[in-house]
Length: 387
Image (cartoon, rainbow, N blue to C red):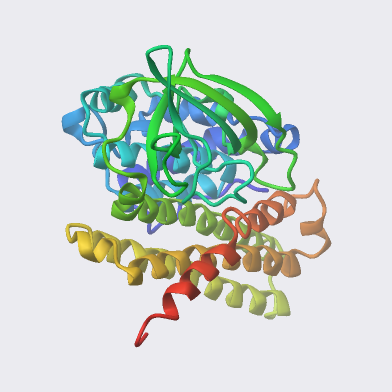
């Protein structure tokens, strides 16, 4: 794919910085990252250099002090060049946001400052083998062991787990607790032990390296979040996760449309042809995707101080629909671009190749499953009196 120009409408500082990292670092390595299903080392090193891993940390705590909405713009910019690199930053930033909002113990505050100063990379271990990816239940529990706390968990997937400096994990509060009585704990290297139990040989989004792991780690009491996991998820974590990950799906759609646009521009000047009309329709899809994301960001930013509004069923349904909508539109944009680029888009060695974009776009439909989001919203809608 040809190099893309930074959109003229992009004036945000963080977004333009992210675009530069995407264009100069992530894009040249994206093909190799995809082919070898390897971690995007180059892009993450550039993010560290520019301190993007601390973008959401307040300046008072040593971070850059950017907002969730500004981070959304940055993720779109990187995802246009390499969705795997953008997903690493997005998933890390979700955990950073959780630390900012809910990490109230001295140990968690110290960890937040260390992320800012040392650019630590944080992973997540919320899924568990045998639960079908449902994050709201846990089989494993935080246990007493040798006078301290210990976690032993069979994790369905930990994205970039081998490269994470710390992993935030869900578990039952005690061995006697119910599956839904969950807490959030931080496991840190070098004490944390990860043993791979599955590989990540997928069609797309291959650079996230989301292998399955057997996680074993002592847990410091000061690295246990005081609030229950359900409270943490309801008061910001789940909402921010939907916004940040949806930004990646929008970025993929932008890459697809940009590729189709460049293909049309390379054609000899002449009367309007079918491809140009198709491109106009494709831009309409992209505008719809951008609008969904922008609207959700504005809504969240506006009601964020109101805990009741943030936790409302209406907010969560809207954000689930955001994920479903943007991921579907990314896949639709990718296949629509293929109709414009034709065999040149189907080839892997052409300037208009859509191979990786199409595969990455369809990954958004199943990470996390759209059907699960729709089922969760449907259960709530059955109890609503009006929509």
